[in-house]
Length: 143
Picture 1 (cartoon, one colour):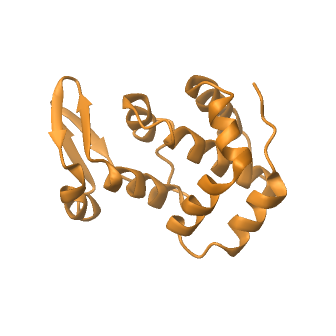
Picture 2 (spheres, one colour):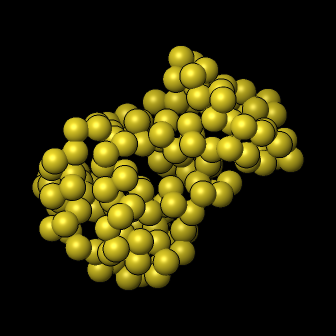
């Protein structure tokens, strides 16, 4: 796995971010984060994120690395991303819940177990007001 990211640039973005949206938009403009996505599989990024999540984060660098992996995973924009957000990526800490909602609110169409949902963005207000939704008899919890 190639984990060569510019931690100093990403840390600066993290430290000046006052919203999850600002953090996300700053991170996706950072070239080393985009390379993290293109040089690794989504599965590798999820596994690395899970390893970081298992241990206690005791520095800003480790927290920025966790956010970097999380955002890189979101950039894949597929069903695996959606499943990740409702399992390993369902974290109730700092801006992780807001990043999850930001991702879900930007979805236009997704196919989940053969159920096609169009213009998911128009339902974003409902997502913000609900603690869960049900899709094909599966409950999806929001942090």
